[in-house]
Each structure stands twice: as structure tokens, then as C-alpha cells.
Image (cartoon, rainbow, N blue to C red; front, top):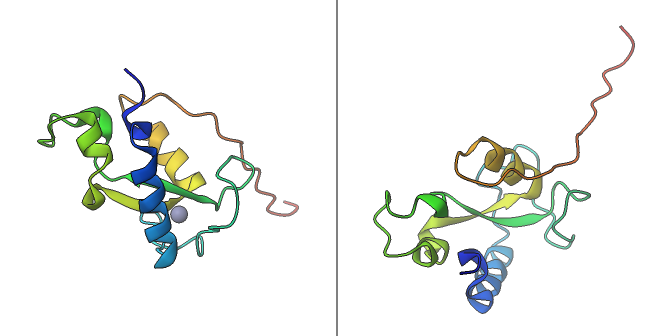
Length: 112
Ligand SMILES: [Zn+2]
């Protein structure tokens, strides 16, 4: 069994295109970090790049009444656009998900 999120790549691509078309804001920070950079590759070097976030974690599909993990991963109402960094931070806090390595962001706040 593979990752349910990638079971239907075409559908995920379609969702991505739809979010991009409406310039959806990040559902996790609510746009606090600014608009999503839809043109950048989704990786740790582009923290504001676009990823699809599952509002209800796919790993807990049974709890949320889905028939399968795939059903949770493909439910448009369960998906929102998000920044790469917001999604990574959320994933790290959600139990049952594999932790993701994110690049530590060093904040320089001047001389103390
Ligand atoms: Zn965000």
C-alpha cells in the first residue's frame, strides 16, 4: 500500500490547479505570512511555497467517518491551500504523522 495522498496524482494536480486559480490563501496561518508563492517548488528552501494541507489528518480517516485514507485525501472539503512551512509546522504537531525535517529558520533580532 502506498501513500494515499499520491494514489491519485491527477486529482491532486487538479485540486492544486484549482487552488492556484483562485489564489487561495494559506488556511493554516490565514495569510498572516503573506500570499502563497504558487510558482515556487514545494520544498524547505521555499517556505512560502504551496502545498495541499489536509484539514482532518488522513491518518485518522476512520475517526472522521471516511471509507478509506484515500477518501480523506481526495475530499475537496478536507483540503486547503497552505504554505510549505505552515504545513510542516502543523505536521510536526499532529500525532500519527511522520515528522518532517524542516530547515530551521534563524531569526536575527538585532543586538541585545
Ligand atoms: Zn501560512
